[in-house]
Image 1 (cartoon, rainbow, N blue to C red):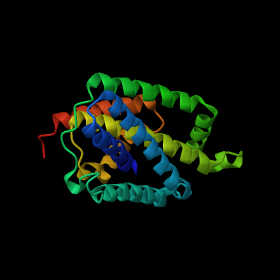
Image 2 (cartoon, rainbow, N blue to C red):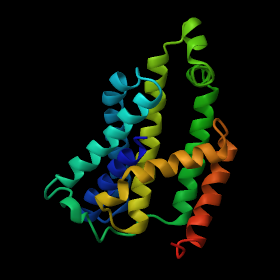
Image 3 (cartoon, helix red, strand yellow):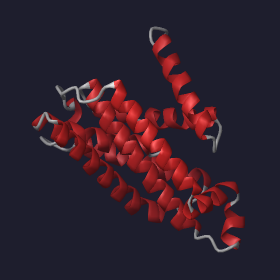
Image 4 (cartoon, rainbow, N blue to C red):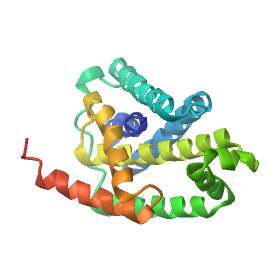
Length: 212
């Protein structure tokens, strides 16, 4: 449940650098920087927290997301506090989003087909069984957590470049829940289902946005 925090890292990296240098090299550099920072944060917090299980793990990752948001609110002139950053140049278009969706999907599929990916699937299916045959479950979960954090950060950068503003209130607990809904709705472990769920829920959000 920490995805909102990692999305915020990518969004603010793009906002801070993009608002100072309205060029695509600066935007892509910000995207890379945001992904590296998100990966580093995920690594630092993942090593101790991913030893937890069940509700305890969910609460710990939720706490990480909230800590990131509070740090952004108290970021002073760098993040402009609760007011956020406005006037970000329109870097992102639908073609760019589509390109990054295709690239991240290919990377994820290839990751799952790799030896580490197979170990990840085994941990997902039965952690005790995976551990019994020599899989370092904590290491595998940390790798998956870092991978997810970096892709979430890239999504945050793209979102900031599309909307043109970033505000801390846009990266609350509900954002992490939205990601979780997509994964569960699409079917745990199904790449195709997740993509279809994201599209369907995205359309529903647009169609029903005027309904309280």
